[in-house]
Amino acid sequence: MFMSNQTLHERRAAAMAQGQGALHPVYVDKARNAEIWDVEGKRFIDLGAGIAVTNTGHNHPKVQAAVQGQVERFSHTCLMVTPYESAVELAEKLTEIAPGSTPKKAMFVTTGAEAVENCVKIARSYTGRSGVIAFKGGFHGRTNLTMGLTGKVKPYKAGFGPFPAEIFHAPYPNAYHGVSVEESLAALDDLFLCDIEPSRVAAIIIEPVQGEGGFYPAPAEFMQALRKRCDEHGILLIADEIQTGFARTGRMFATEYSGVEPDLMTMAKGIAGGFPIAAVVGKAEIMDQPAPGGLGGTYGGSPIGCAAALAVLDVIEEEKLCERALEIGQRMVGRLQQLQARFPARIGDVRNLGSMIAMELVVDGDVNKPDPELTKALITEAASQGLILLSCGIRGNVVRFLPALTISDDLIDESMDILDRCFSALS
Image (cartoon, rainbow, N blue to C red; front, side, top):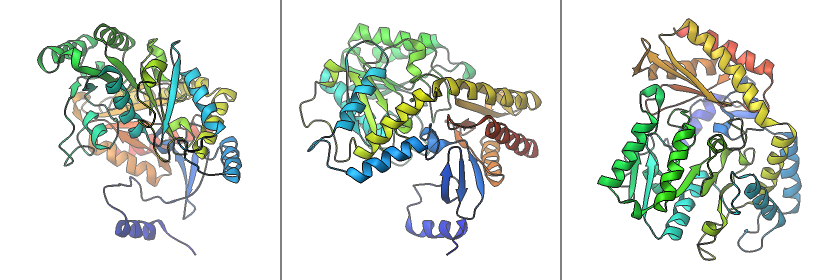
């Protein structure tokens, strides 16, 4: 029986909470690599990749085969009750590829927010301290604790307070918006003087590239300065690599660009090609602080997720997706900069780290005049023309591009042609 997008959208509105939003009324029937087809047969180029989840493309044959093989054996036993080899192997591989030479261990959960929460639990257990410092514009999840850490109010925090105590926010360095590394560090030092003494801070958590905040990379010198301050005060440094991990930025993890070794890392999204699994990886001594039973969850380390993640790691290596991420970024940014040259009053900035790419829209070329209306209109128009885009930024004026790292050059060029047409029509 034929089912239209409109009919499904009406059914969704009647049955599902509106808080679990839907950016596009496009109901997917099938997907392959960087393309999806809706229930009406319309084809779309997907430059969102499920929000940086399908880095290896939709239904990569190797990932699909690994999952099918696992389902034939068993789907769930609970890792904490009767474990299995795939989880051990995945932990071995993740601890091997994590930045730095210190021996590491891993633990598994199901979502990125759970990974963040467990980092805070582990840090508090290890240090005996309670305070956590995060950054303005950061995004760490939608649970109560991770909302408290998140530095963006709408739509994530509005109406959901109060949030846990002992969480503090410092400004994130952002050259385009006039926030220097020195100013960010001075503000952090000011927190230590005015709000919480460093001897009560368990951890500082940072995204090496802010995701929801607007795709702003943290300068290497800032990450290095954070590492130094953490070492001086016995504070743990947590790198939230949920959106930046697994070849997205041209390295396996974005933290590698700074040469910094975090004490704890969160991993999710691109880890398993679309199957729900997340991890915390950290220095072994720190990870072993919580007693048995203090960490985990019923679905944590799903055998299906483990099988998919192992296949994803193989694909990243075999298809050289870190190198491909750099090529994709260069090709797309080249086209975006051409568009910016034609519309300098509307496109304030184009930036990227590998295939984590952003275009910030403004009015009259003024960084202080964001244009969320144009951003929203562009994303809507692009979808009508068969191109899936996402927005981000605390002011809602950044278009973000997260293509599958397996996308072809032809599809990149086609997607940029569509973007060009849509932007020109709206400008």
